[in-house]
Amino acid sequence: MIITKKIREELNNLFFLLKLQDRHSNSSLDKQVKIEQILAYLEIIHAQIRKTSKKRKLVFIDSGAGNCYLSFLVYYFYHQIENREIQIHCIDHNKKLMSSNTKLASAMNFNNIFFHPMDIIDFSTDQKIDLVYSLHACDTATDKTMYLGIKTRAKIILSVACCQHSISMKASSFKIVVRHKSFRDKMLMMISDSLRALLLEKNEYKVDIFDFVSSRYTEKNTMVRAIRTSFKKQIDAKEEYDNLSREFRMKPYLEELLLTADK
Ligand SMILES: C[S@@+](CC[C@H](N)C(=O)[O-])C[C@H]1O[C@@H](n2cnc3c(N)ncnc32)[C@H](O)[C@@H]1O
Image 1 (cartoon, helix red, strand yellow):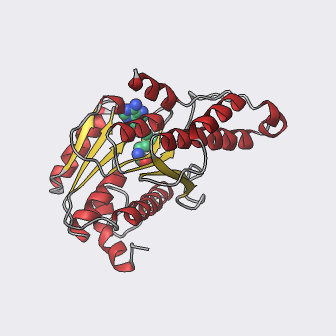
Image 2 (cartoon, rainbow, N blue to C red):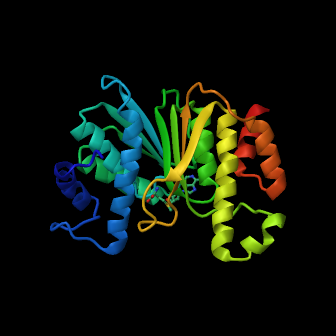
Image 3 (cartoon, protein in one colour):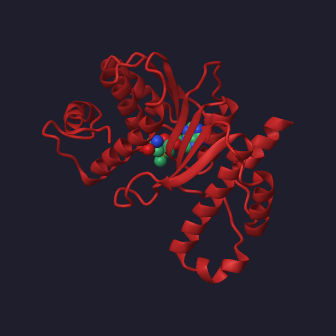
């Protein structure tokens, strides 16, 4: 737990500037929920980053950043509270949001956070990337986030998927299970994230999948955490990927992105 009572109180002003709270620290239910999500996400980020030398500059990418609440919090936490040098690149193809966030960052004197109005797939950098993260990046944006992480050789990739409209699944052996919508959605999420995890493992990332926040704050609470490290491989990721993909007739867009990059 890094968000102590003292830090949480200090964050009230930031949340006020982000219009997540009013001056008296009150907010609507949807904004309270967003605050809980980003605080929980920050805890997960810091669990990894705290292991790195404080002298090193951190470079992060927020993929499908939207209103960038999470990145404003992450920037504030490392810059103001941890006193670390940090740079964050926020990417979103919503030009209006990127422009309003640029103004907000400038008004708050957040000088090392940048907003890139573009598709995630078009972002490139020569910098060494510590972390690529996304929160509820919709549809194929989750695949693009993971691809960006692999392409930039990011040390850590964190991703929480949102809707998955473009992905389809044939679950013949589970027909009786997936006729219930709730189970169909859960199964789609479990299989698609398992396939993505196998692709990450093929690319030398150690992966675990877990709930990053209570489902009280969002049903879409499944985080994929991938860390580029050497580790003892327990399974043949390629073979397992092929088997699972064939069984459910499912191919996440990440597969296509990686195949195109190999050509
Ligand atoms: C549901 S919002 C989440 C925003 C933010 N991460 C949050 O948790 O509040 C998803 C965002 O992803 C952006 N997005 C989706 N696909 C994208 C793509 N291919 N390239 C850039 N941005 C994308 C959308 O414009 C939108 O702002």
